[in-house]
Length: 345
Length: 260
Image (cartoon, rainbow over all chains, first blue to last red; front, side):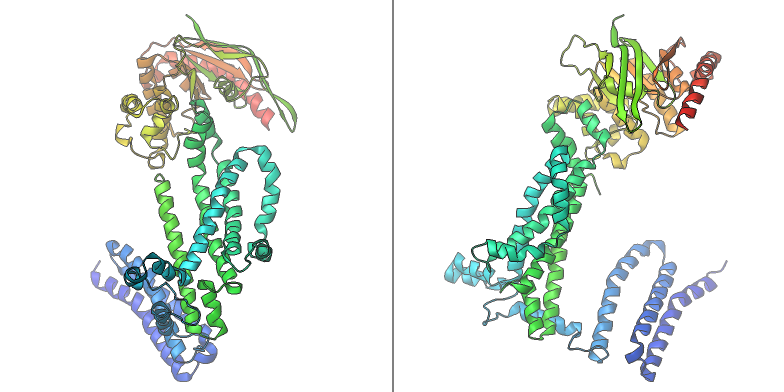
């Protein structure tokens, strides 16, 4: 078997789709098909790119497979962004609703470095001013910087609310998992409240708190959202422990406390963390929604405000910040998860 | 010899949707100190139920089933080797084997010293810091056996411990069990559905019938010790397993029909 034809066919496998793609796009451009046939061209383009990537992957030696897949995971989103940029600047996409990514990045830069005098806020609280403020005004100056930050406002609501909800939920869920009577009493009620969108009880919370527009109702609605998810998944985690492990624990003389510490807690942990991850995501959804309607700070407020004034690049920039917050918080939780459960890798 | 396990008219009934089910009916058994007794019977004959009752994981409805305590009150009465291994996924091999000792409040250095000995006896020394998910089923069952032995109970209760393993691994572990038993001469109650396994390992094989579970007959295994897999090739072994099978065959057939 000679290497020549194999290599030739291999090159064709990834080159041909790309050539076809280029020809297709050029022809569509020349004939002015883009405006009405963009969806078909997009679909065909995607298929051709997949074919090209698969052809290239088949031709690569084994040791390049993993780096290639990693590159693919990064390159494809970049390709999408490039396509978006091009479609938006060429006017196929209405740049008012879909501004090119370059302008969104510019808006994000604007939001980051600038202080909004009108509302007295900035995106991240201008941390580069911390040394100067500390020298001029001491710690109160630094606190003021934190207070002007939209990111910090959202982050603190999510973290405080999440902690206030998740910690009691762990206890309640544990008791529900262990005690049949408590479980029978609470399960139906909890499941009923669980399906209720917690944002719907926000008006009641505003009435309950002395300052309806303050932080109280916002943190509480996050806490309540997290509570039910974490409590029910903790219960499921405790109940889901393999019965034979409980029997082994008892047979080897574990007392109640030792059972909890050595068998039940670690046994429930995987599903508990599932619940925590879901609760964290929900907390972010809820807080952004609340900030849409009742806040003067926070990333959700930023999204909504720039929608109201039709500043779509800044709106997208704020959405981007929400995504970064979500990814960052999830990564943090995953780190805790890895540290808490070294046996699962 | 002093009896270590005593059961007199042990009876277990439990309610189910089809009415009361009798799992065990008037079951008598006596196991002497240092004896290796195998319980054999068709599935549903209550052999595992009896073992779980002795282990304190289930209650009797009537009669008596107990383990006679030894001279040292701190020594645990029994420990179980489960068919499903029941090793804790969140503990390393070392901490799994140390579990019973840890529950009894032994310090780290003390229990690890004991554990180290048992780990080398079952050939797991290299895997001491592994988690169960990183080792094979055969090794997990070794962990489970070492965990029970390290706790040094008066009686070792084994509930079809090799039932979930493939034939080759089972053979290897049978020889390991024989070797370990030669060293320790522990009192063992061993539940299995394999006649060959029972004859290879046990001093005595107790046959049980199903519906209700009770003792049918028993056979003394007078094959010389120490035994190994070569024992299974002797004519004496074949004669004994053949005789037991003669006795059990109708029972198994009846149990199958009852389940159908």
